[in-house]
Length: 80
Image (cartoon, rainbow, N blue to C red; front, side, top):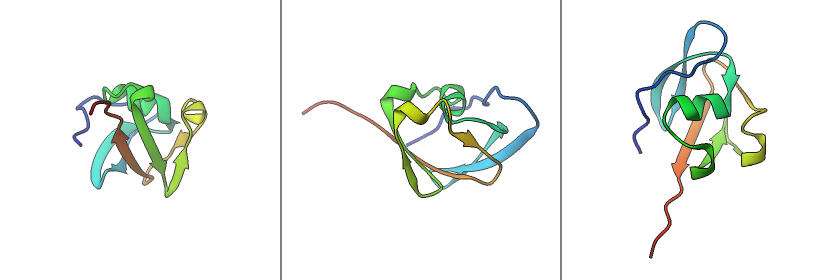
C-alpha cells in the first residue's frame, strides 16, 4: 500500500516514523488520526497497528505518534 505524500499537520518539528516498512516524515508528536488524514487516508477506511499493538478506530484521535514509531496500515476494501 502506498502512503500519500502529505505531511501530518501537528505541533512541532519534522521527524520520521516507519509506516509499512517505509520512512515517512511527519510533524511529531501528533495523533494517529492527524497522521492518517495528512497521508490522505480516511481513518474509518484503515486498520492500524502501532508499535505492534492493534489500535481500535475509537482511539485514533487519542493515540500519540512519536519519532521512530512503527505503523502498519492496511486499507479496508469491500467487494466480492
